Length: 418
Image 1 (tube, rainbow, N blue to C red):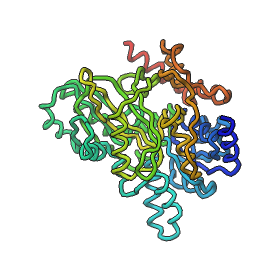
Image 2 (cartoon, rainbow, N blue to C red; image 1 turned 30 degrees about the vertical axis):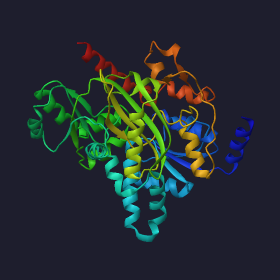
Image 3 (cartoon, rainbow, N blue to C red; image 1 turned 180 degrees about the horizontal axis):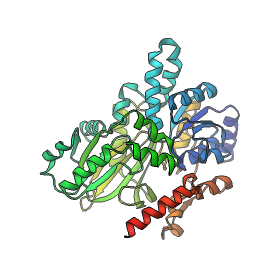
Image 4 (cartoon, one colour; image 1 turned 90 degrees about the vertical axis):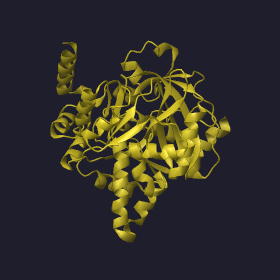
C-alpha cells in the first residue's frame, strides 16, 4: 500500500494534464477531479465562472470560464492554454461542443490537426460521434450488436405517433440533447403523447430559455434557442421494472474498468439517482463492451437500463457519452475508472487500490442528503470530507441561492399542491 502511495506521489510531479469540461453545476466533475489528482494527474477545468463545484475543489489547478454564447471559443482557449493530454467531458452539452469543435478544427486544415487529434484521442473514432448523441441511432446500433432494447420509433412529426397506437401504454417519449430527465415524458394515452411530443420539441423555445437563464442561472439554453434547435424525438415501449446503469472507462474500443448499479432511490420516475446498489450484471457489461468496440470509443461513458420485473431481463434504454456520477468511485479491481484512466495516460499498469467501501449501498452526496433519504444511515455516504469548501458549496447549489429561484420554486410548489 505504501509503495502504491509513493508511486502516486511520483506521478503527481510530472503527471498528465487532464481538462474537465462542464456547462452544468453538477457535483460529479469536482469529485472526478479529486480522484484524478490523487491518482497523480494534474487537473484543470472549463466551467461557468460562478458557483461551479470545480471552483471549490483544491485538486483543480486552474479553471477557465465556459462562455455560453461562444462555447467553442472558450473550449479552444482553455485547450490551447493547458495543452492537456486528454479532455474529459462531464455533461452532454460539452460533448456536443467538442464534436462541433472537432468539425471546426478539421475545416481549418493543417493548423487544426493538433486540436482535432486531441479530441479524437479523448473520445474515440470521430465518424461515430453523431451516433453517441442520437438516441435512435445508438439503439439501432445496440440492436445490431445483439443487445436487448425496448421497441423504439423515431418521430419526425406528431403524426408518426398514429402508427404507434398498437403499442400498449404507457409510452416513453425522449428528446435528444436533453439530460437529467428534463426531456423524458411518460404518456398514458394518445392525447397525452401528442402533448408531450410538442413539449419536448419546444424545450429550447424562447420562454424556456429565458426561464433557465434567469431563474436557474443557466444561460447555455440561449444558444440552442438562437439557433432554432428542435431536438429529435423517439418513442419507446415502457419496460416495467427497476432502473439500473453502468459507468465505464474504455480505450480505443476496449473496456478497462466498469461499475454497475441498480437505482434504489431517484428524483421521480425519470430523474437522477440519489441512492444506488452495486451489482454484478453481465448483460450491462456485455452492452458496454459491444458498444465501445463497435463505435471505437475512448474515455468515460455510461449506459442506462431497465431491469424487467419478473423476467429480470436487462434492456438498454440510452447512453450518456460522458463521465457519470459513478465515474469517480474507486471500488477495487476492475471497478476503478480513475486509476484505469491515469494508467492509460502514463502507460503504466493499473494500480489495484482497495475499494473505498465494502457497503454495496452508495448514497450520492448531496443528492441523497438533500432528499433526506431514509436509507442514508445504512449507506456508504460519498462525502468529500477532506474538501470542506466543496462540501459547503454542494450543500447550497448556486441557482438556489437567488431570490428569484426561491420565488419560482414556491410558485411551482403552490401550483402542484392546488
